[in-house]
Amino acid sequence: MTTSTDRDQQVQQLREIIADINCGMFTTIDQNGNLHSCPMCKSGEISSDGALWFFTYAHSQKVTDIQHHQQVNVSFTSPDQQQYISISGTAQLVRDRNKMQEHWQPELHTWLPKGLDEPDIILLKVNMNKADYWDSLSTIHPQIIELNPTSTVSRTK
Image (cartoon, rainbow, N blue to C red; front, side, top):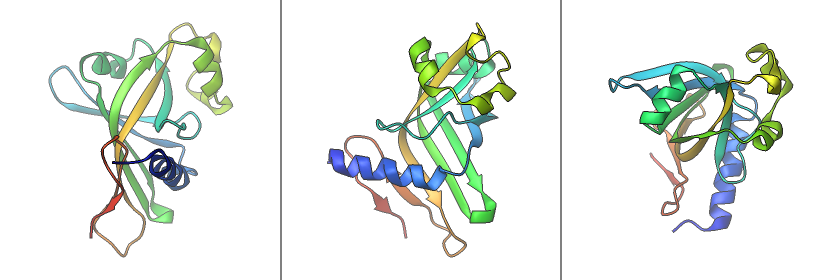
C-alpha cells in the first residue's frame, strides 16, 4: 500500500518532470467512443492531492465528453529535454469561483480574454491515477508512477 509520504514523493517527482512544460494534449472520449485531443495549458503545478487543473469554456466539446466519460489522458512533451509524459486519470468539472481564483494564471488571458470575468468558464480537475514517462534516449520502456491508493512506484525495465 502506498503511504502518504510515498504519494507526496510521487507527486513531487511528477511536479519536477513537468515543471517547465506548460501545455499538453488533453484527451477525452467522445459520445461515439472515439478519442478526441486538444491542446491545453495547465494552471499551476500539480496540487498536493495529485491533481492537474485546467480552465476551459463550460460549453466546450471536452466538457460534454467528460460529462459522459470521466476517463482522460494528458500528455506532455519536451523533445529538447528528451522528456515524454502520459498521465491518465479521471476528470471532474469544478464551478467554484474561489478555486478559479486560486488557480488562475495571467498567461491564460491568451485563451480566456475576459479572465475570471468570463461567465462561461469552468475548471477541469484531473485526478491522476498513473503517469508513464520517458526521460532519455537510453530507454524505450516507460517509468511508471501509480498514484492510486493501492499502488507503489515501479519501474519497467
